[in-house]
Structures are given as C-alpha cells and as structure tokens.
Amino acid sequence: MEQSKNILITGGAGFIGSHVVRLFVTKYPQYNIVNLDALTYAGNLENLKDIENAPNYFFEHVNILDNAALEAVFAKHSISDVIHLAAESHVDRSILSPLDFVYTNIIGTVNLLQAAKKSWNGNYDNKRFYHISTDEVYGSLDNGGFFTETTAYSPNSPYSASKASSDHFVRAYGETYGMPTVISNCSNNYGPYHFPEKLIPLFINNIINNKPLPVYGDGLFTRDWLYVKDHALAIDMVFHNGKVHDTYNIGGFNEWTNIDLIKLLVEKMDHKLGRATGESLPLITFVKDRPGHDKRYAIDATKINKELGWKPSVTFEEGLEETIDWYLNNSEWLENVTSGAYQKYYEQQYHS
Ligand code: NAD
Ligand code: TYD
Image (cartoon, rainbow, N blue to C red):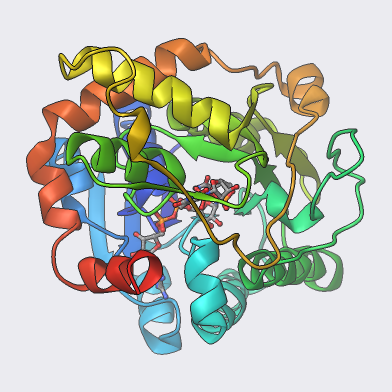
C-alpha cells in the first residue's frame, strides 16, 4: 500500500481533471485529494457528483491567480504533491482572447510553483510537482515523423505558446530551485465530460440537434486521439513512477484526419439515433479555416511505454462507442453546460 499523501489537483472540475480526481479518490483511499478549481465556464462540479461525498475528497473554490488563497490551501491541507491541470484549454478561444491564456496558463502556473516552493521551504522529500501539458507545444508535423520528448518546442497558437511557456517555467523551477518537477505532454483527448466546444463533443451535440458541423478549411488536418481514461491512467503512472525532472509524451497511436473522423462519427450517431445511414452527412459544412491551424500532431509514446509500461487500454472504436453512449445518456449535462455564456461564444464563433 502506498504511503499517505495530500495531493492538490488543479482543474479537477474540468474534463481531464475530473477523470484524474475520480481515479485517485477511488484507487487511493489512503490519499487525501484536494480539487482546486475556479469553476470557469469549463469547470463543472456536476462532473464529480459520484465521488463528492468520498471521505478523502475535498474541494477548494480558488483561482490560481489568487496567491494568498493558494498559500492558504497549501497550509490548510499540508499539500505534499501537486498535479496541475488548471488551464484555459481551447485554441479558438485563445485566438479571440490571448491574454486570458497568459494569465491563467503562464502566471497561474508560476503562482502555483511559488506557493509550492514557499510551502515546502526547501524540503523536497516525498514531494512532487507534476505539470500536465500538451503535444501542441511542439508545433505542427507538416512533413511526417512524430513528436518525441526531444522535439524542439515550436508553438503556433496563443494556447500552445502559453502552455510552452508554463512548461519552461516548471522545468526552470526544477533546475533553479531543485523542485521535484515532472511534465507530460499528451495528444488530443476525447471521452465523457468533454466540454462541447472541442471537435468530438461539439459535433456529437450538433448531430443530436441537427445543427451544422463546421469543418475548418479542407478538413484534412490530422490529430492523434486518446481516450481520456487512458490519459488518467498514464498520469497515475507518471505521478508515481516517472523520473524527477523528466518529461513523458503520451499518445493514442491513433491518427485521424478531421473529415474521416467526422464521417465515422456521423455514421455511428445516425445508427444510435435510429436515423438512416448517412442521413446527417448533409450537416457537414466547410467553413473558413482557423488562423495558424496546425496541420498534424502525432506522438511517439515509446518512452512511457518502455519505461513505465503504459499503453492505451481501449481501442478507438471502444472509446468512441462509450463516449457517444455517455452523451446520449447525459442530455441534462449537455443542456446545463451549453446554456448561458457558452451559447454567446458559440454564436460569435460560428454564426456571425
Ligand atoms: P478544461 O478546459 O476542460 O478544464 C480546465 C479546468 O481548469 C476547468 O475546471 C476550469 O474551471 C479550471 N480553471 C481554468 N482557469 C482556472 C484558474 N485561473 N484557476 C483555477 N482553475 C481554473 O481542460 P482539459 O481539456 O481538461 O485540460 C486539462 C489540462 O490538460 C490543461 O492543462 C490542458 O492544457 C491539458 N491537456 C489537454 C488536452 C485535451 O485534449 N483536452 C490534451 C493534452 C493536455
Ligand atoms: P479541437 O477539438 O479544438 O482541438 P485542437 O485544436 O486543440 O487540436 O480541434 C480538433 C481539430 O478539429 C482541429 O484540427 C480543428 C478542427 N475543428 C473543426 O474543424 N471544427 C470545429 O468546430 C472545431 C472545434 C475543431
């Protein structure tokens, strides 16, 4: 049995964070899990309803821009470890409002590093600061190949530039102050509780509601999709067994062009909704491309596989089935998160 720990998970009310919190709360009853989240449009405590009464789960409604509140949380819960997921996460929003990404992703991360440094006060025994990042920091693979841990950073969007910057700060705290940091960079996730502004949940929601499916540019952009529960399992492994000051790439070995993925989604959704095969295909609408749109992401996940024994546990077929079923069975969740402020953003993005 693992020793007791008081783990601060930031962004635990978001998509990936909620899966990580659920995994840690249920798998490690000897750990106290403190979920710190500002509950922005993307954070939703409904995502954690099933575990909110667990005795080892605590919630702190705090913004990582609030230094005093961060310090208070470290002191109150005697935090021994951090798994940092809180971020502004959507590329399209970063194009509209880059400063929000500078504040939360860069300044918020440095605030958190400072709070940990102050609280731990040079005693790094049994401590860990684990930063969750993205493969988008590496830029775009236009001429083949894969991203490895040694690929040079070349971010193209305000989102990826802010994540790259936060990665550098985490690394710098490891080098400069000896903080026991570790970083992982993951490919595109999909699965339950994914906010319906990202490709897969947005298109599931639009197919259900017979709304247009806005395909950017020619639709030939490629992403490497990983089921979110497999990302959470990888985070568990890196947290416990990853080498301090190291980085790990996590990916699905699962590349799809957007248009092929969308056609597969339409086929599956039409079947589930009792529609004729291909009935929803006319919803596909080619729209203006995203500025600075990265052509292709693909992760070489050999290192985490060889060193930590991680590989995806479900096929894309299985993960997509589970995801579609989850959205069809959770229409109330979809309605709740797509009302209000989100609707305004959506109209601005796609219907102006
Ligand atoms: P998300 O947008 O679903 O959730 C982000 C969470 O952070 C929300 O709960 C939000 O309320 C919280 N948050 C935002 N700003 C905050 C602030 N200032 N203070 C405190 N909390 C704040 O994001 P996600 O898709 O779950 O991504 C989580 C992390 O994983 C991010 O760091 C992201 O860069 C990284 N990542 C995401 C993907 C992906 O495909 N979604 C892939 C690789 C890495
Ligand atoms: P997204 O889910 O926003 O993730 P990311 O940009 O971080 O990879 O987008 C995935 C791909 O789908 C990306 O190539 C952009 C494209 N896309 C569309 O074609 N239409 C859409 O409405 C959205 C949200 C994305």
